[in-house]
Length: 364
Image (cartoon, rainbow, N blue to C red; front, side, top):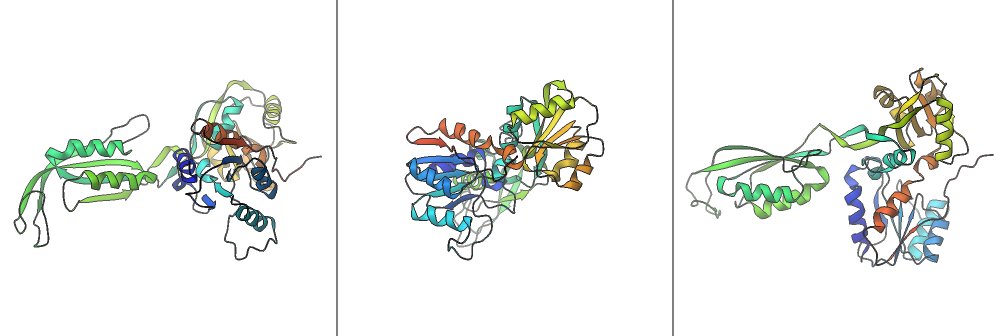
């Protein structure tokens, strides 16, 4: 089993194209063709994390946060990032990061937060734009069923709870090949008119290579006429944060104590109590102040995230209970998610949950 087999499987859960533009995800250190001896799953990659990987004979670290976030001009071991990179390279240990790619899937970081809280009826808080694409192509009528089937098999035409979705229009196409052509139907230099079907399908952006391979492999024409465009539509199943409902409404103080205990945090910072029951809860792992307005617009009674600044608590404006549980605490269950996911697929080597806490914040 090679590293690429593990990372390809992770990317079925969290495609790298779902990551935010500012992020640095994927294989940060190592070679995709290296044989895997073991996988250590962690939230952060520190020097002690690399030591833990060495001790457990793991040559692949799957980390949520990327240890290399911006470019490194030197690797001299002068800070913790450089020391981690050096130690990993010296010990032939690869490092792979998921970060916002896993944030943006509906069974990712925020969904795991909702799961441990017992939320029901969860859906995406901020659906993502720009990741739905549309393919339009033209094929002889007699070949349309086969091509359509192959596009579906490659992943095209999946819309929410439906699959095999397409739109088809019959018409007449024209073409005339030059002296270098080799037309499938007709003769070079002769103007041809052919009964064709126009097939239109949508697909997730990360599937584009696979979709186009299926198109070119199964289309009968020498020159395939096709168009691919990116839609502005939101993908309701991909995006930041989640919103769901508690099984039963709770008063605010009980809710805050429940959250404190569930996330095992040293303290919960929160906005003004509003003397309202908490039923509908929005969540976003990590730094989530940017989504306060989204949580309010979605009708959440409370919003759980981290890293709220002083003035951001004013944004509650008596509409919502803002709840800051801490950055590490909000994302701590992510490594359990990844271990469970990987363990279902790979049994030929160890999938180990890191026992090291990488939380840099302590409470007194």
